[in-house]
Amino acid sequence: MIIATTIEDVRCAVRAWKQEGLTVGLVPTMGYLHEGHASLVDAAVASCDRVVTSDFVNPTQFAPGEDLESYPRDFDHDCALLEEHGCDLVFYPSVDEMYPDGGGTTDTYVEILNNMPKQLCGKTRPIHFRGVCTVVSKLFNIVTPDKAFFGQKDAQQLAVIRKMVRDLLYGIEIVGCPIVREADGLAKSSRNTYLNPEERKAALVLSQAVRLGESMVAEGEANADEVVRAMTELIQAEPLARIDYVEAVDGVTMENVSVVKAPTLFAMAVYIGTTRLIDNFSVEA
Ligand code: AMP
Image 1 (cartoon, rainbow, N blue to C red):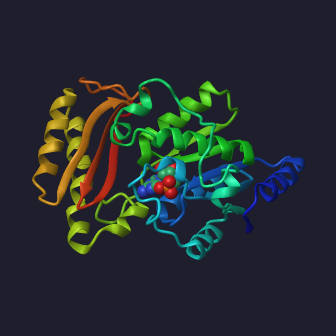
Image 2: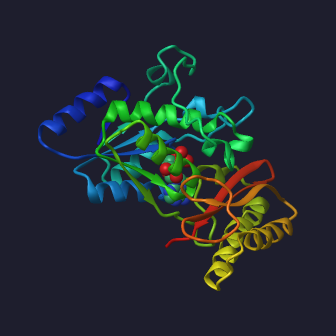
């Protein structure tokens, strides 16, 4: 596996692959990789000739006071996992490589101006999706992939990226991959490492709420507010949990819905202690 820290080295490797007629898949990550990330690499390896994974904690998607400095990092472990899953190149740039003005700041952003990035996570993280779109655009410009792989775990991010790709005419296929969970149901997340043992147990309310919502929908509940109410009550019964949001939205536009109908997305963000966790499920057609 090639370890590239400069944009030029990535471009050089991709150029050579493309000259051979090979297809390229991109898996953007912030590192501290787990089996959720590995599932994206597996999907990329299965459908592309060469796979690039980016490992970069992107400063512009964190607001002051969020966990940019404390975000967990372990590049040696990331490399071992990527190698094991057949990744061909890991892109591990410095902040200055990605933001040439220095200090992780930029004068140029990619931002969706409709309501979509203001909903759900955007209510408490108003600059988050602008940072995500900006860094993913940069990665698209560097890697020029045929396909890019994102997790359904970050369902709003996936919807925002699909919208950006459509609006900016990126000729890149966006592939959404299912949520990978721990054996007890907790969605795998780099941030799970922040949880102490008591919080780790309490965090199960998220996946329990997902299962409750899924079963209500499976049994025919068509009133989205009823599903949200039941999920909310379940989470509120856990003393260590504090709800940021539990909502039902259209899975494409992120606008609130009150009738359950594909592609409804039930999404939540919940603080367990000081750790903010997200989870969701989608109603498929
Ligand atoms: P992150 O490193 O948290 O920015 O995540 C990088 C990519 O991995 C995003 O597309 C996430 O949606 C995806 N991802 C993170 N956790 C999971 C999971 N548990 N299952 C599936 N995909 C995930």
